[in-house]
Image (cartoon, rainbow, N blue to C red):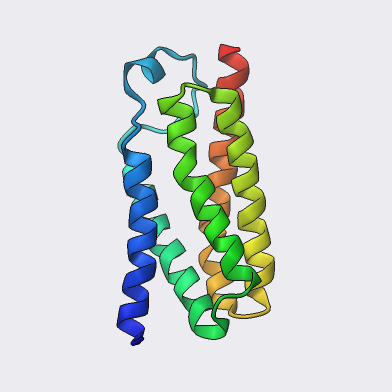
Length: 150
């Protein structure tokens, strides 16, 4: 498979996760929840996620090129599945607590990917650093919303 074709596969996988997530939007229910003052504006989410999803795809692709299907790529896939599930849990099922559980598992997968990727391709690991920061922030936000809306 050519490099362009393999990159396209990773972009498609990440796009599938993004589309899955976009099927479940915040909507009126989310608007009624008590949220902290540091909740970002709605327009920031699609901008941030577009950038992050591109970085996630490139990181996975770089690991694929470097070692094929190994532990780092398996963890990458698990993290992507957890990422895709979060919007369904939070906005589809309206389950703030279970969304937080999913987010903690996603955070752990991101950290595990970074650790595993550092041994294979440091650029791939560094590409996940902004993702880790964003998911850490999202986790804090999810937790506070959960506690405030019991």
